[in-house]
Structures are given as C-alpha cells and as structure tokens.
Image (cartoon, rainbow, N blue to C red; front, top):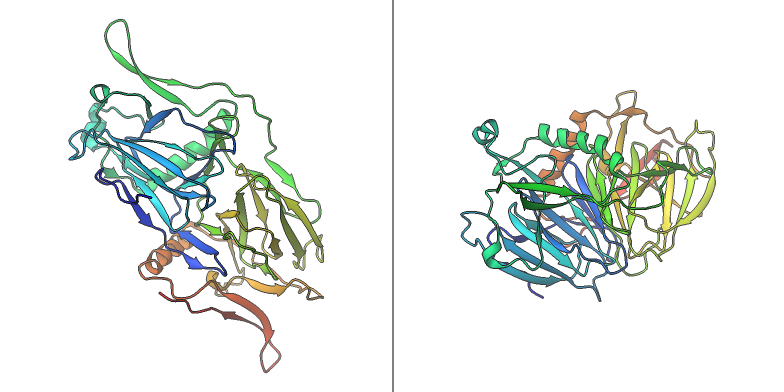
Length: 428
C-alpha cells in the first residue's frame, strides 16, 4: 500500500507511542485544544463529496482493524499558487495508531472504506492576514469553514482558493471550543452541513449551507451507574452526519490521549486506581464487542465505599464513561477497542507534590480487603495543564524508552505505606 504523496504538504506523521503490554500502546497528544472523534458506523458509508477547509489542517489518526480493512483517500490540490495545484491523488492504507495523516488547508479530500473505522482529528487552525480580515476581502467564514465539491468535478471546473496561512493562537482555540460547546447541542437533529457555491440570477455567487433534518433517538446527557457513586455515562456534544455517523466534539480543556488495546487477548489482572485523575473514557470499536468493566470503590468518604461490582457495555463514540478518582477499574475483553481519554486532574488539598506519571495504584483483582484511600479534591488550574502539555512536548522529542508504569502499593522497612513505580525498558 502506498505511503507517500505527491501533493505538496500532504503527508503521514508518526504518532509518538508508549508500549502498554502485548500489542497495546498509549498515544498522547500534547494539547489542550479542541479535537473531534469522527465515527462512521458499520453500514456502507460514503461522504458523497469532497471537503475543503480554508482555515483548518486536518490531522487524522485512523483507528480500526489492521487486517481486512482498506481506507481509500482521494485528494485534489485546490490551493491557488501551490506547486502541485490541480493535482489529484488516490492512496490506500490500513488503520493504525502509529501515524496520522496531515491534510493541509486548501486540499480537497474524501474517503471510502471507513465502515468500522473511527478517526481522531487533532486539527490545526489558521487565520487570514490581519489586513485581509479587516478589509473583509475573504473567501472564508470562521463558523462555516467547509467547502464541498462533487465527486465527479472536472479539472476545468476546479475552484482554487487562498487558504489561511497564519497559525492561530491558543486564544482562538478557546473561542472555537466555547462556540462549539454552546452551538452543537442545538444542532443534534440536523446533519453536518454541506455547502455549494451557487450563482444567483444577478450573476453573483453565494456559498449556500445546506442541512438535512435527521430522525435519531435522543440520548440522555447523564446516565448514572447506580452501583458506584459518581460513575456514569456523559453524552458528548455530537454533530450527526448520517444515520450512524457523526462527530463527537472533544472540547474539554484537558490533555488528550488514547489507548490502543491491540488485537490479541487483553484483560487487566489488576484494578487501576487513580488518586488525582478523573477519567473520561470514550470507547470506540466494533459494536458487537462486549467489554466488561470491574469496579471497586476505595474512597473513604464515598456513600458506596466498598462497592465491588461490574457491568458490560459495547463501544459507543457518542458518550464517555466518567470514573472519579478512587474508583478502581479493570477491563476484560477490551482488545480491538480504543479508549480515548481527556482526564480532569485533582490536586492534593494540602499542597503535597502530585506526580501524574505515577498516579495509578495497581491492585490485584482478587486481593481483599480493598484499600481505603483519600483521593485528591482540589481541581487543577489552566497553568497546571499547560505545564503538563509542555512536559509532554519535551518528552516526545526522544523515542520512548520505557513502557507505562505498574505502581504497587506496599510498605517500607518502617511500616509506612509507599508506592513503587515499575517501568519496563523497551528498545528505542
């Protein structure tokens, strides 16, 4: 399968990954910016048109079966002045967590073979020059940055655009996240927009946005799990794009990562217990996959302290599972499923040092009695998250040398309870 591209700027970029046992990996994205999870369902799927952004470069990681799945991408360079303007390309690849496809602004794209494939888009935003923005001489709308072309568009009918070229600052990403959070719940019953440039009777051309109304069963915003206090399913802001497809918008301003659980047998032999991390887990994978999660409530002050229970579920990209700190969790049969997490961090109220890399206690699933723990309670501020993003960017400058840690709860020679982090060294 082809891996290189002739269109300038269209390229594969390696994802930095940490080994997580067997063929599993943790893939962190050092960003607080909004992202989106694009899901396509399992029935035959086609966008039916090309899409072009003028203020956005897509960065797409394709998650799905590595065998028997072939994604076909179709691309046209519609950038005015590009050395490869007008060039068309078709490429075929298999999903993998190891790399992301970078599609520059102004490059039209569409895909086939996305059934049973989900895509994480950690897009980059670009703004026009200040002069062009002030003058209003723009072929770009911030709240409708999508232009659609028919699949059979002829070479002589290709439009050409000048995409935005100024990388947006963090303040712009914050504005976009706030707008998405406010606007998307109002669009739950209409399809993702399709645009057409249409000529009016006076000869002028206007870009028209079309939305088709959809009938989809409404899902609650919060579904508590009665067995453990504070555990439950939370609905993402979702933009539908078809009966089974759509976009789950990941707008929480927390660090983003996902776990590729591999395709061989994967089950946890220990509960993972965080004291400072509130997990927000989105599961994507085959709908016929049944995952079991086992829970223990170790929170000393919880009304369900001592709860020892389990439940089963199937992957659903439209909501995430909220797991408060102190709730131990272990999964069974989670191979072929990907877990996307934007966790919230809680810090010790007494100012003690908190080390996020070691914030997990691995408690054997059969070991009883369960521990009695006091989770952190002070919500971290924006400065904390920005520092973590900076740490991750620095870490990604070199290859990963160790796997994710196993942290054991034990006692030292004086009988004091301590945690010991064990990391397996891996080949660079």
